[in-house]
Amino acid sequence: MKIYTKTGDAGMTGLFAGPRVSKADPRICAYGTVDELNAVLGTLRASGVPDDLNPILEKIQVDLFSIGAELSTPDPDANGVRFLGKIDIEKLEKWIDQLEESLPPLKQFILPGGSVAAAMLHLGRTVCRRAEREVVSLASHEGVADCSTVIVYLNRLSDLLFVMARRANQLVGESDVPWHRPTT
Figure 1 (cartoon, helix red, strand yellow):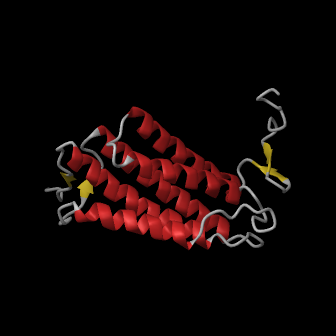
Figure 2: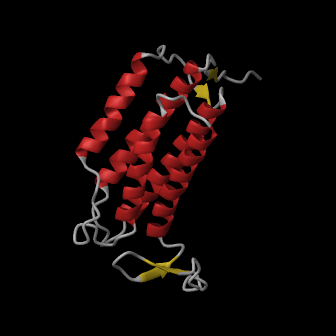
């Protein structure tokens, strides 16, 4: 089987168990950004991440692929592609709480940066926030299946990626980079 089908050459793509839609459709934008986030996290894992963060990131990548499947399906319930639930969100919260226990309290805003792993986690956090905004936009369209679990998951995930960035810096002895109010 060839990787190219030529069926998308006119700017249309097929949904799983659904119609063909524009590649600019809000659904395509939403799951495309989730896919982009997954690729950012994969790049991070390939370039080196502290060992205690790697299994968390792998689980997140699996979850993101599941979210992509759900978002690419107009009727995820009828097609059996609702894979995430409350337990997955609780797992993110547990990881946030565990990682925060080892971090000093945050007393000011920080800039994305420090170690390469932390900077890439911040990049993932910003892509995650964009994915969340795009799913919220998708959910506002009439006839779109409930996306509330995905929205909560992405919201919590962006918090986790922020905490992981701080932890990645801590593990290699880098300090968070504080933001200072500009002086004029």
